[in-house]
View (spheres, rainbow, N blue to C red):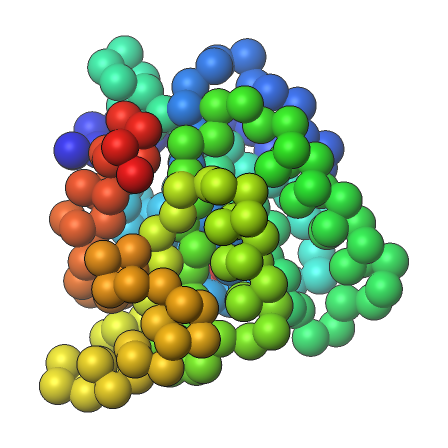
Length: 198
Ligand SMILES: Nc1nc2c(ncn2[C@@H]2O[C@H](COP(=O)(O)OP(=O)(O)O)[C@@H](O)[C@H]2O)c(=O)[nH]1
Ligand SMILES: [Mg+2]
């Protein structure tokens, strides 16, 4: 698949199906792990999704329409978890938002669960992945920031991540939003999810 066009459509704090009934591929993961950067990398637009936005600010679900007029779909940037300074109220609000999204989004085709190659998955990461599995939502784990680790050492970092999340190599893409490592592979995975083949 190629991404030929992309545009920001809308932000919402409370999920309501967008007017365009496109299939949706959602990004989830810790704050700062590179969800927005991954969208920008796939779309090859450095400023499409806002990168490095301070966690704790207004947390919204952002919708980007891709390939309109052809085989359109939405890339959905979900608010991250695991932000250091979140208070209980904020975490509860995040949980309610995510709950509503995952339970009422009929057109969700799959999720890209973004993790950081340098860190073993946190308890939140494991919970998130378990949730996706329990809901039967197709997912791919994007092991991002691969550019931070030399090629030869990546396998050593990857193994404990796969083990902790209990995912298989074919469910993961070693990725770098910085240098486009894994971009083609990720586009293939997206295509599969959009066609319900995953
Ligand atoms: N080196 C490197 N930095 C990255 C990569 N992806 C994201 N970043 C940086 O990580 C920070 C957080 O990225 P962002 O996309 O805003 O994360 P989000 O909170 O998950 O949406 C920014 O400073 C990005 O430039 C990557 O693949 N490699
Ligand atoms: Mg972001």
